[in-house]
Image 1 (cartoon, rainbow, N blue to C red):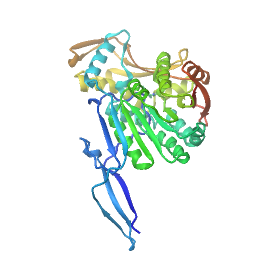
Image 2: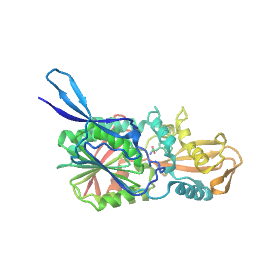
Image 3: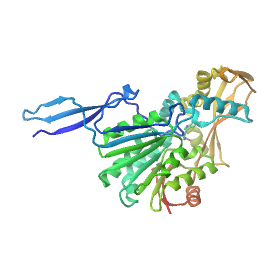
Image 4: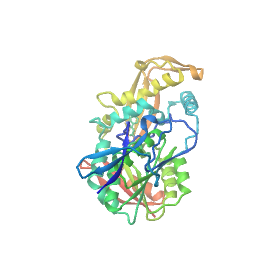
Length: 400
Ligand code: TRP
């Protein structure tokens, strides 16, 4: 018998191990749709990531596998990326840095953390002993993924907002594939390159999967999804993604997400829980200094991309839990009086000793906060799962 199987081989891979808060904005490119077909050799300026098809003419009578390559047939579309990112990325950074450094108090937008180096540093943060969030959520999904997907009836389509990495997503995908034969996965992420590489890896792992990806910000992605119809849907918003929204932005986001769902669909929402100050501040100010490097990399990025002359040693990283507002506030603080020049902006910025740039908030929740958020946006809070140390929550919100 001549068994023939097609095997996808990927020549280079780029994995994203954890979920980024808001992903990098450094990908340009006009709006376009790239389609990958099962069995197609594909390479669009991505030669280092090209999918290759190798045909094995299975174990023959003599027990040896003969390998030959041959042109493949196009069978079905397995992978599409809709690229919604249209703005020229450097212009966006320049404009936002000018505005942020001219305002009082000074601030930066969190999305600028995630350039190439920043994304790698965030991967490292997820491995730190102090940053318990990633491990706690992994524990929950490892233990309860089957229970979570069993809460929803029917054949499920999976949406993920801010997918970045797919490592935690895999646990849900595997649980779904134990319950149904095939799966459509719709990831939405600001980074087309992250979507491209993580999608290829997923397709390689799960032959039962098709992927329809959207590269763009959350709201652009949701606006596109609203135009399409789909089967029973489970949406994922994992990691601590919700934490970087102010309360009114969180409401706006959940509202927009609810618009693309139907009654009976569900959202699995990851949320870090309120807890003691010491644990929270350590999670955002680790002993090794990785989080400090991640935060200060924004200054380094301005030096690299906008011709700035920030002296990094003249600034320090700060993370403070504001208990009243239920959030960890992240700042860059100037150690002394100093001036910085940013040549691409033709701008001189003065800093007083102790002056701060606010770079990020990370909101912490308790279960009643989540129930309220759900109730205000067309959901009810269904089951909640916690890790063994009860630090982090995975909440199933049911669309009503
Ligand atoms: N969404 C993550 C969180 O709030 C992002 C994050 C982790 C982060 N560490 C950080 C953002 C340090 C800024 C600074 O947990």
